[in-house]
Length: 106
Image (cartoon, rainbow, N blue to C red; front, side):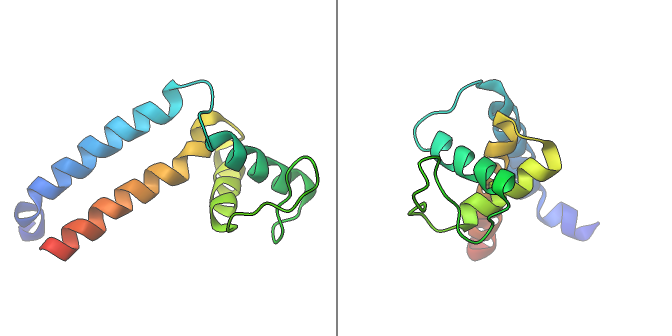
C-alpha cells in the first residue's frame, strides 16, 4: 500500500497513457506508413510458418530485424489478425518506455 501512495502520480500517467494508446489502436481502420509493411510481414510469417526469416509477398527477405514481426505475429496469434492487434506491441513498448523513464528518474 505504501508503494501505491509513493508512486500514485506514475500510476495515473500509465493508466491515462494506456487508455489513450489503447483507444487509438482500434480506432483507425487503415494502416499508415510502415505499419502495413510490418503487419503484412507478420501475417505472411504466420501463414507460411517461417518465423526465422520473414519474407515479403514478392519473396524477398525483409530487411528489418525480426523482433517487430515476431511481436506482431504473437499479437495476431492471441487477438487475431486485425489493425489493433498489429498495433498492440507498439502500445506495450510505449508503456514499457514510460516505466523505464520513470525508474531512471526516480
